[in-house]
Amino acid sequence: MKLAARFTEVLRHGVALARRYPASTALLLGVVQVFAFAPAAVLTLGVVTLAGLFLLFDEGTPGRAARVGFAFGVGLFAGGTYWLYTALHDFGQTPPWLALLLMAGLVALMAAWYALLGYGSRRWLLHAGPRRWLLALPGGWVLVEWARSHAFTGFPWLALGYAQVDTWLAGYAPVGGVYLVSLAAAVCAGALVTWVRGDRRHFQLGLLVLVSVVLGGAALGRVAWTQPDGAPFGVAVVQGAVPQDLKWSPAQRDATFALYRRLSVPVWGTPLVVWPEAALPVLAEQATPFLREEWATARAHGSAWMLGLLSYDGQLDAVRNGLLVLDTQRSPQWYFKRHLVPFGEYFPVPAQVRQWMRLASLAFVDLAPGAEQQPVPEVLGLPLAATICYEDAYGSDQLAALSTARLLVNVTNNAWYGDSTAPHQHLQISRLRALEAGRFLVRATSNGISAIIGPKGELLAAAPQFVPAVLRGEIRPYRGLTPYARLGGDWLVLLMAGLAVLVGGWRR
View 1 (cartoon, rainbow, N blue to C red):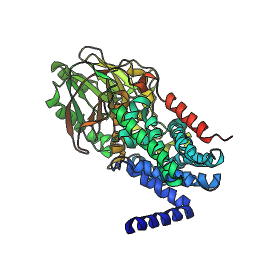
View 2 (cartoon, rainbow, N blue to C red):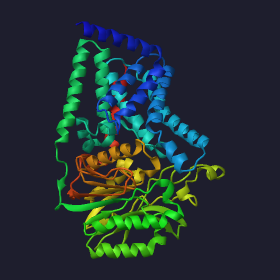
View 3 (cartoon, rainbow, N blue to C red):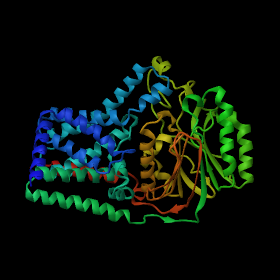
View 4 (cartoon, rainbow, N blue to C red):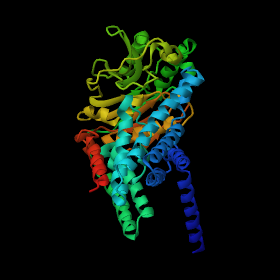
């Protein structure tokens, strides 16, 4: 009894302190929420920190709530994307002041969305009680997450649903994608607020909602939305681990070619061999003799081969980031990256400042995006949904290929981010993509984390970071569509979130 009383007293003082310094508390909550994501991945932390933000939104003026939301966003994105400085300055050769300015601009833009949520929660969503906590605020949270993931080129990183990939809430991913998982987590946060702020009846309601949402996710996670469509077969991922600051050096070029050739010798004969994004530090047209020799070796051993390469299009006078698919039974096929990284692969800035921002690897030209509609590549007779690097953070972009695709493949270059949390966060995103689609996903990265992911989002095998390695495993084609793929993506959860805001905020 004394311990419970002491805990209650400490909690009361903590709440009083948070009310006195709401913006500082929100900033701290945002920083703490970073640890809900990989590599820390503290499972319940995302829900608890969001509940704390909802509590802070419950008091004061719209302006105060906006400041609280902005502070939370600053903490989340400054703490969760600090590695952008490494990419921009250490490897991109951007001056420190400009790298910091670009980072601050991104953080401020992302935080502004949460300021909008805070302002709206006190300006329009004034209905108090469970309808506000269980409907209006969770719905608003999801609408903001989706909007900031797509507006102004979009930045879908650190969506709350990704932090739930190892919880029962992940069962909602095949039904409505990552944003339905975010909605489920936000409703759970609202249930916690209902416990804290409501009376005894509200406490029981919050408990019922929390248990129902969690058990609902667990039940959905047991459903087999897709089915095997063929026998398992072997796959080998070749990870060269060439440091980014050496990769594009002319002196390193021959060593990189020799490294990938040497690593691949033992795996020719494996049905599918995958090299990462931009594996060779040249344009595809400059590597023709090497590609011809290696492809002859792969074909002689019965291996299909996929590798990331930059390619020059003479008709467009443009360089594109591509995935070359060399199948034993077909002509060479290309998939070109559609969703380019701003300030990484193209520079949406006036020409006057480009000289400070061009990356060493692409100093001569911006990359050009691939066409929105591209033929679905096939390998070993299996259609596949391909993504390159960052574009696998947009789950809805690959839905068009899922009607025929039996396998997911992502090639990426995480060397830009050094020894940071970024590769772990990206792997977490890839795991949820596999879960949404109900298919195996092969992930080939330049220096880690290369992985083989199962159709339930489970991590089946992973290569160590920062060392040359070959990851071997077994995958299997799958057919069928999850509800998320069958219903066409995010529109259903956006409709649910919008209705939740309207019902939760309605006042007679």
